[in-house]
Image (cartoon, rainbow, N blue to C red; front, side):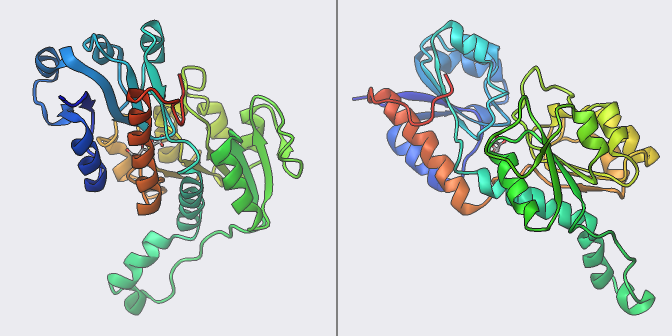
Length: 315
Ligand code: 8YV
């Protein structure tokens, strides 16, 4: 019997590719130079898409696949999947929630610490010989006991806040409503007010059309010259032009970012700044979590094609 055909939008670790290749006929979209041509030639029998959070599946891709039934996302964020296009055709969508929550929270907190304490500069201070030549490393700002804001107290935001509590931080959060599972943390409805009472502002909300640029000039300016913005969600949640302006003018003290507009080709203005920590969208990037994500991508596809309930459906 011939294997079910799947469009693979981006590469996966070798163990995931082996399992997918053993069970499905995988069409490696990311290796095609002429994408539209590739879809025209290969698309007619494709019944599933395996994609990644940041790559998604747009309307043109969905519409080019007349037999498409299911889109399995390697990532919790599915903002890059055109859900309206999927819904119109009754196409199922799955993601990989929960398995990555704690790793993403760990990296967010590590980014705060690394940036606040100047750890990247400290490393260069040692390696370059500056320590021996110039002496003590410049002093940095304390983290513990300061005010932290968490914008979006979902699964990831909650884990970030839990970790910050361990640093004796004064924690507040914004969300669409106060959460009864967070009685010890202050609810501040307006993100501008949240930023104004924060030294560190974590952006942890799921991205959608509604949250686009929720962190705009007003939020950034409210955070201010002593404040730090940490983004482990999606670039679209932040007005990147306003962020760059504020970092350049020092209207914002610092930022620590794991996600960028147009990544991996980020705006070159970031590279000229010394008050931003840049990470390559790796918050979920541990062996343990990525293996669990890959297993879920595969298990959701298998469940669909074997007529079993999806494990982690979005649609
Ligand atoms: C990426 C993510 O999918 O979970 C998400 O939404 O963006 C990430 O986990 C991961 O970087 C693999 O591409």
